[in-house]
Structures are given as structure tokens and as C-alpha cells.
Amino acid sequence: MQLLYPILATAAAYLVGSLAFAVIISKVMGLADPRTFGSRNPGATNVLRSGSKAAAIVVLLLDACKGLVPVLLVKLFGKPYGMQDGTMAMVGLAAFLGHLYPVYFHFKGGKGVATFIGVVFGIHWALGLATGLTWLIIAFFFRYSSLASLVAAVFAPAYYLLGNRVAWYAETAVALSLVATGALLAWRHRENIQRLLQGSESKLGAKK
Image 1 (tube, rainbow, N blue to C red):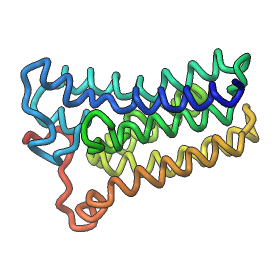
Image 2 (image 1 turned 90 degrees about the horizontal axis):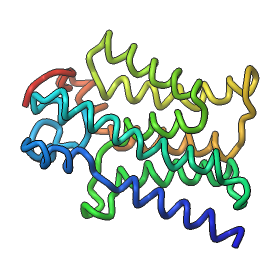
Image 3 (image 1 turned 120 degrees about the vertical axis):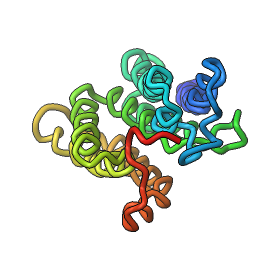
Image 4 (image 1 turned 90 degrees about the vertical axis):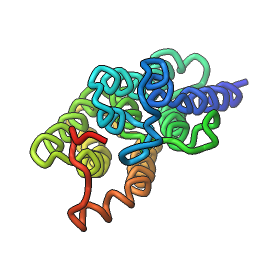
């Protein structure tokens, strides 16, 4: 049973991560499917290009919760069931993979930025705050969501390892999970990287 609980938690996190809220909320609010315009990415940034800030905010929060809630549940209640930091790392990665490759949407998902931020907040609030602020600072000054996401993904594992020397204990499994998540996020942004190099990447706030 001690092995069963981590497996069930990881599977549940993947299923929760597979909920494509950009598509669901856009449909509920009568907006165009985000997979049909802009970057065609089912995420909050592309929903913003539809012109609805309210919808984008709702999607952003729900996508973040997909990463935050599973990790936080394991962190707060998992120990009696044999679920500790190793399970927390797997659950966070599973929720992120669910967003990237959702079983409910033919495994064609978003790029996972908000879910990634949710995961790091679940691991530690200070890690989430540092990573989120990094995203906001880069996005504010450069107006590129993709660039902000890539920088935040690179810095998150560094912040976590730095935190080991300052405030909290760095688990190898969690550090590796953050590195893997960052690598997957960069892979999903490979077209954005090419457009950034070419100077043709869409800026935040640009309409479809």
C-alpha cells in the first residue's frame, strides 16, 4: 500500500493537469477557441489575445492551481501515507505533463507556464514568489511572455538550490524535477525561441 498511494497521487495529478482550462473557459465565456488564433496555444497568454482580460486571469489562476493543489496536498497530508518529497516531485511533474499532453484533448496541450509556477509555489512559497517575480520582471521590461517563461524556468532550480543554503532543505528528487520541468518548458517554447531570435515573436497584449 505504501507504493500504491504515490502511484495514485501521481496519476491523479496528471488527470488534473490534463484539464485544458483555456479551452474550457473560452467556451464557457463565448470566446474563440485559443487553439484557432495567435500562437494557437491553449494557455492564458493566448486567451489574452482574444481581448478578454477577465478570461485570461481566470485561466491563469486555474492553470496555476493545477500545479499548486496536487503538490500542496502531498506536502501537507502525504507523510502518513508514505508520500514525502519524492512523491511531491513526481506529482508536480505529472501535473505539468498533464498540461502539456492532456489525455482529454488528444495529448495536445499548452506550454505549462502557469502550471509550472503553481508547482513551484506548492514546493515552497518563497520559491514560487522568486520564480513568479522573475517572470513578471522580464515580462514587464521586454513584453515577451515566452522570454519571461524561459528565464523563470532556468532560475527556478537555481533558486531552489540556493534556498538550500539559506532556508530550506533541497531534496535531490525535487531539484531534478524542476530541471526536467524547465527542460520540457524550453522544448515547448522552441518555436518561440526561433521567433525571438528572428524578432518576430508576438508581444504581450497583442490582439489576434
